[in-house]
Image (cartoon, rainbow, N blue to C red; front, side):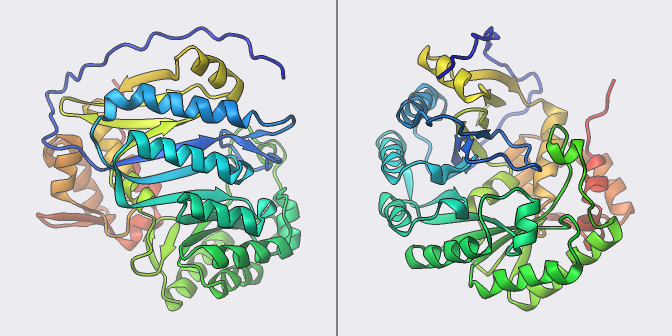
Length: 404
C-alpha cells in the first residue's frame, strides 16, 4: 500500500470562549464512528468515502479508532453515551468481529445508556444473512440501509452496486435479524417520473420499515454528476414529488418529523435527533467531526480526512487535524440550522441550555421570520410553519452571522 506524504500538522491550541456565555448543564452525548471505504464511489456522493481499490487495512483502522477514542476520553470523561452510529462509506464492509471488537472497546471505556441506540449503515450489495445475524449479536440494534431506489434503471443511473433483487433481499434479511431499521430513498432522480417515485415509496412502505429517509438528489460540487449533470426533473416536478411523498407517508402512518425523515410513532432516530437538538457528539475516524460542550465553551473538531493520512497521524497519537471554538453568533446560527429542521421546532429553554445565550441573541431574526410567516412562536416554544419548512433555506438564512 502506498504511504501518504506527511502533512504538516496545524497547532491545536486550547480554545477559550470570549462570549461570556456559560452552560449550566451539558447536553446528551452521542458517538459517531466513520468507516470511509466503499466498493465503488457513487457519482452523486460528496461524503468522505473512498473506493477500496486495495485490501482494506481493517485491523489497523480498528486499532486507530480505539486509540482515537482513548485520546478523546479526557474531554468526555464520565459522560453517558446515548447513541452510537457507524457511518461511511460502507461500514458493512467490515466484519462482524471488527464491529464487536469496537463495541467491546467502547463499553470498556464509556458509560453507555442501557437502551443505547447502536446503528450501522449498510449497502444492499454487502448483505449476507449470517453476517447481519452476527452484527446483531455484537450489539448493533438498528440498521440504516442505503436502498436509494427499487427501480433497476435508476439504481444503474445512480451508480449503485446493487440491483432491485438485492434491495428486496436486504430488507428480508434486515427483518430476519432486526426489529428496527431505516431505509434511505432518493427522489428527483435522472429521468424519474412521479409515478416511478411513488412506486419506490409504496415499495418502501410495503417493506414494513419503521423509519424512512427521503433525500432530494442534488448535484454537489466535486462530484461526477456536478461535472456532467444528468437530466433531472425540473424544480416544479421535484416539488410535486415531495408533496406526494408527504401525503402518501402521512396516510401510511409515518410522521414527517424532520426535513428528510419520516417515522412511525416512537421510531424516530435518537442519534439524528441529538444532532437536530444541538446535542454533543464525539466523532472518531477519518474526517469525522465532533461538537463538544463544556461549561465555558463549545468546540468543534475534525479528524484527518484521508484514511491513509488518518492512519499515519493516528500512529503518532495525532488524531485531530483542526479544532475551533463555536462563538456567540455561530451558536445562534448552528442551533437554528439544526433545530428548525424539526417539525416540532424547539423549546425556548433548550435554546438557552444548549447555547448558554438568552433568546434575545436571536430576537431580530426571530421577529423577521415571524413577520414573514416562516415560524410560529409563543413564550415557551418556536417551530417552523409549513411555509418555513418549504422554504427552509430562506428561514435559516435569517440567522446567518453578519459579516463585518
